[in-house]
Image (tube, rainbow, N blue to C red; front, side):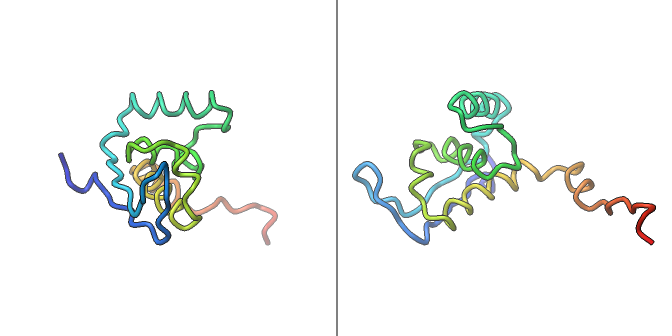
Length: 115
């Protein structure tokens, strides 16, 4: 397995969760296979969280909990910067594709009204 697939999120603000001190999360992105992604998306939407989209930080935090093998409730206990770091790690992984890079790099179309 590629060791780059396992990323450590060191919490700036460690928490207590279910009687344990949580100081970091080991996020193993290799756990986010197509099958796992589909099941996670289905579970996310069935729990009423909204659309399961890789551009949603909440959905990506949900995926991060799967990759870190921690309860999804733990993610909600993290302070904002730690929550976002874990979510952005997954989001960057999911959106790091050539066609997304091309789309984001494309110049916006210019309107004929802009004169």
